[in-house]
Amino acid sequence: DAGVTQSPTHLIKTRGQQVTLRCSPKSGHDTVSWYQQALGQGPQFIFQYYEEEERQRGNFPDRFSGHQFPNYSSELNVNALLLGDSALYLCASSFLGLGYNEQFFGPGTRLTVL
Amino acid sequence: GQQLNQSPQSMFIQEGEDVSMNCTSSSIFNTWLWYKQDPGEGPVLLIALYKAGELTSNGRLTAQFGITRKDSFLNISASIPSDVGIYFCAGLSPANAGNNRKLIWGLGTSLAVNP
Image (cartoon, rainbow over the protein chains, first blue to last red):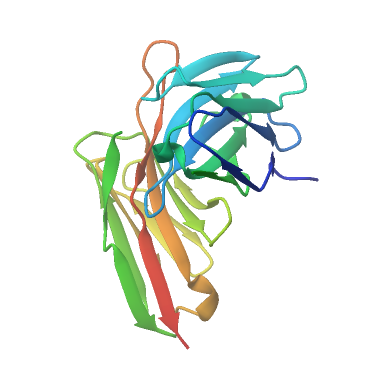
């Protein structure tokens, strides 16, 4: 049983570019949450997707957008990249029927913006 | 964004020692979660606490949900080298309309264990 997978593992972009990160949830999970983790910080909630819709959103600008597909996988898109967007981007999946609590994380995508 | 107060920020201990870390908040939480994160990995859930006053163990780890619902602690007994990593607390706020609950995270406690 595969856990949460994310791709790519690492990514280097330049300011102003756009990036797409991908996440496949743990088998049986239907909810995907995205987090941004800067170096030395805890994860910051970006948004959560359930039933292909954004259900909750943290304090992130509209440059951050996402999508969930019918197979529950998800993408995070960031437009007009800034240097401050450099971080580890974590995807967490859960099964809404079990409640919000049991979130399982993927290994993350390390994004570097030059 | 909102974050919990987690302390200590870092610890350096000898193998075999016990460890204690805690998280506090000005807000009430319905759930407290403790995660461990190794370098280059995502956080791994260690213990979940769902009721005020609850004391839960997972092997050498013990965590408690504070009676005021505004704090939690994690203890590690008889530490071993593989306990090295960053430990995060996370609190789940009470449900609002539409089940709008968010996980709020601490800044982490970095643990180093000297063999």
